[in-house]
Length: 632
Image (tube, rainbow, N blue to C red; front, side, top):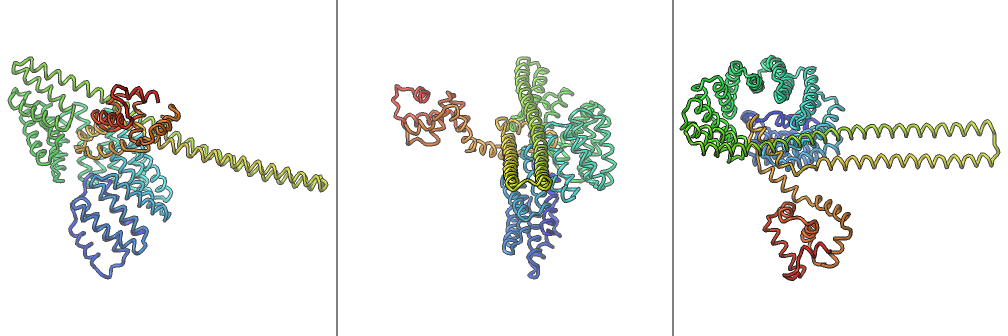
């Protein structure tokens, strides 16, 4: 138990912060000395190699895996199951940092399976928690909530209140990203209550910031300020400079929302000092850009330009394209305000180039608006009209995307509520069935008592007694059959609920790409995090290749067009599964574009596939493939 606990405590911190601190060379040296000591027992070697792997998780993934695999080999040779689980867990952490989330999930699930066999509840809870974190980073919020709920129950069963609170905290974060601020705040307040009882300063400060974040998004700036002022008192005592800077930045957002730019400037300057202590160029640049924007609103344009240029220097160093685009746009807007059209156009052009490069529609729209104002002041009305037209088109596109995003959020909120309702209904049904079983048992007992009393009091003859016993056996058998029927109904309802839950988790994949893109914009603006499109592409490709989806399609298709596949195979025995799919889609009278979208090929590829199918079916040039398929 101690081995896995130590390994997990080290790994658990990875998911509670966005950045890992620099390697502690003293720790690394100590761990190397430990693993190189021939007298070190195997159980300690497992811990040492795993810890070394985690130290290199962010800087040298290859070396990290080498150390962790050594721990895994030792744990396997000594049949140390919890040591094996700890190594699997550490490998999951390394893959997480490489943004290879699917691989990370594989190793976390391996750790979960081992801990289930070992009946180690804390290990199961921790693995489920990490699985939930991966799903949250992948924006699979419903699956994340499900994992966090399971980990929460396990931590509750072993009275681990801090881990229990962290699971609740993450459930609140998932609801925030879904857009259900009411639920998010409800869970964050629950976590806050536990942290306060445990005097966990870091936990309390995180919850204050989370609560204020939801209130700011709802434009309840004054309520958010009340939380943030309380948060600052707590966080300053903890000495956590990162959390102080986050709280200050949220206070700035509140005062900007209230158009109180003097106070926004005051807290921005303080936040900048804390950001400088961390040495993180990205965070410093973001705060400098924010200060430049505040000076713009205060009409102190020279200071605005000064801070925006400093921000731009740090953005170039960091390579954060979204923040660089925003800063260029702000510089263009500021130069325009002082009628320096050449500089305004220079930075507007830069902002436009970046926004197109990263496909930021809002950035493009805002930049076209600025460019229109610039050329309009230069006396080029026709060119300005062109820019205004492009800005209007982008605005319409953004409105459509926003509506789709809201629809997606409402759908996710509905699905979450339905899932919770179904779980509650299942629990109620289980309780009801348990009560029925108890009642049936009581009936059996009462029946036996009555039979015995009847036998003693009435003293029926041997024949009558035998007949009553036979009737009692029949009644008992009937009751047993009733009980088995109830048990079967309960089992069916469980399977039905699980099937429906899986169906809910797989719904709406059509909107996934659009949702991911929009959430990237939100995250980019609020937290300046660059989204990795490769993982999105991998997820989409995996969904497109999902054979289970084709099997479901085939079942539904056969239900409508009975014996269609059998007829085709009988008539054309050499037909391939891929060609069967194409024939089924042609039977549905879909267009080239629709078929290409379903099969994940181009329209030209659909044409080639049709041509090959015509040859396979020996269709003459004057004959129609479509007519042939429709008549099958």
